[in-house]
Image 1 (tube, one colour):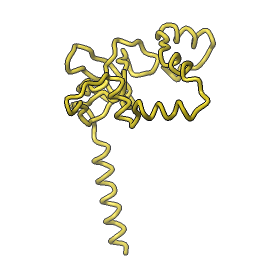
Image 2 (cartoon, helix red, strand yellow; image 1 turned 180 degrees about the vertical axis):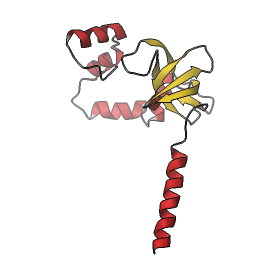
Image 3 (cartoon, helix red, strand yellow; image 1 turned 45 degrees about the vertical axis):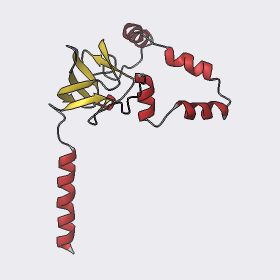
Length: 156
């Protein structure tokens, strides 16, 4: 019984060690509609540019939940949240053309038909939701709001 328990613990440690391998040097792909690339690791760092769904990057460094990347098709380098990336290659198949927005939503199981059923079965005003999705607050304005309101920027 003790041998079995020890064997299970060893196998568990090996699997955890394999999972915790570094992403450094790996090619990853943007798995969100738009991924901001920041000047440093942190939500409130200046945005240097953005990557689009499916763009490929090479990870050069990791820090907590952030990765430093170099875009494959441009000279853009900087930091993005690791949650914005996946190791799975993202490609469109079947020769169908779709926008980056459509591909990002489809990858999450959301389609025009699913949205239509949500709209029909809900009392929500989707015009307001559509308007909120179009809002974009510049980094400087957000930083000023945090500073003037004496809010915590989460250490960033």
